[in-house]
Length: 253
Image (tube, rainbow, N blue to C red; front, side, top):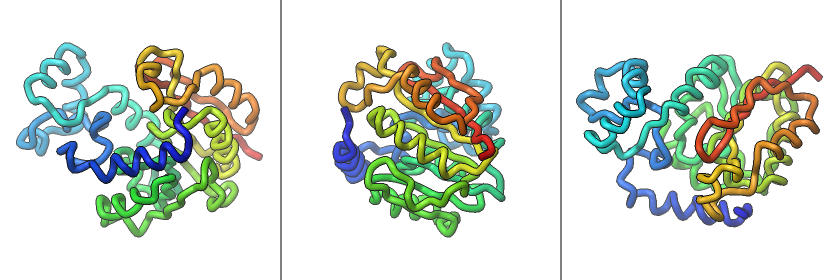
């Protein structure tokens, strides 16, 4: 099971070794949500995002283009759909948003329209990386390094939108439960939380070994039953081959 200390060591080491990946930014090794990343630069600069996404919808064409262009960051339509349905509609210039586990900013870049961005990561090395990657938006950033699975520095009912992607797949179930209680505390009534987590009932998650925590959809349902503050908008248990997606709305207190 990936402990807090394991996570600190693993991701700090990966960030230090990132230059060996020869990728555009840290995190793209797990897939780039932008469909244009599949195409060479001379195509990418003029192709609209929506056009690229439409071209890449058929799996057969996607495989063909991946073989032809050999992108360093693979594209998954599910990730682009997540942006369109559950990020862009909720992140506005008036939003205070919170991201747990931003890493190198793979998803942070879709939050930059917000008024304030609170970034929570147990590896503080990523904070400097994010400031350098997004210098025009760094003044919006507030960083917090938790001791484990806490959001103690964040005030009650202060957050309009929360996103965590790829972080909870590496957090043990008890840690996810603690985070859910903290998320319920910090969200404003009407706020939306988008949470991606691993599911070891899926073969692809089991194949990850120690990297994936023993989390399941049944445990997520159990944890959410403890929190009547949440209304479940979506619980997609077929989101990816190794993981699920849950979208929550915070109810009035």
